[in-house]
Structures are given as structure tokens and as C-alpha cells.
Amino acid sequence: MAGFFGKIFGVPFDIRHITISAANTAIGVFGMGFHTIPVKELLYTVFGVFSIGFLNFAVSFGLAFFVAVKSRGIHLKDYPEFIGILWKYFKRFPKDFFKAPVLREARDLR
Image (cartoon, rainbow, N blue to C red; front, side, top):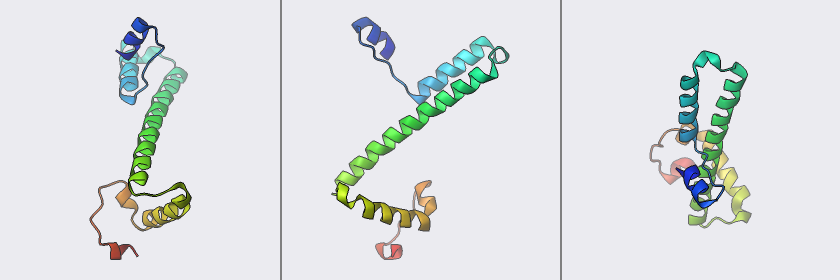
């Protein structure tokens, strides 16, 4: 609906979201017939959908990271030290970045 309202009000507004892009791609592929689309075009489209997903993820993560860092009172000058601590934690507990972490005591992190 964003593109529709953009046209009505004369604002060049559109949204790029992974869900909408993937759904439009699926509708197009199955509407035209899978075998009628050149492989090159299909690869471009799939790459575009993945790019939109990556960009959505990067922006969401970046904004969440920014809010989390600000809420902890970490300033830009503290980033190198913070990134070092984060890297050490990642090396020691990599699963925690992909699955909900087990609660640990602060003394276990030293």
C-alpha cells in the first residue's frame, strides 16, 4: 500500500522489505512459470531479495546496537575497548551470538 499512497499524494515513496520482496518474487515466478524465466534473471532477483534482507538486518542490528550502547553509557571513544571485550566474549562463547545464552556469573567471564 505504500507505493499506492505515494502515487496518490505525489510522493515517490516505496518500501523495500524482505517479506514483501520475497512474496512478490514468488508470485512472479509462479505466475510466469518457473521454466520460462531465464536463470540469469532469476539469480539477479534472488540476489536482490537477499540483499534487501541483509540491508534490513544490518539497519535493524545497527540501530539496536546503537540504542544498547547508548543505554549503557558507552561513548565513541570507548568503542575500541568495547569491541575488544566483545571479541573476547565472542571467541569464548560463540554460541551465545546465535542462541539465547545461558545466564553466567560475571566472575565466569574473566
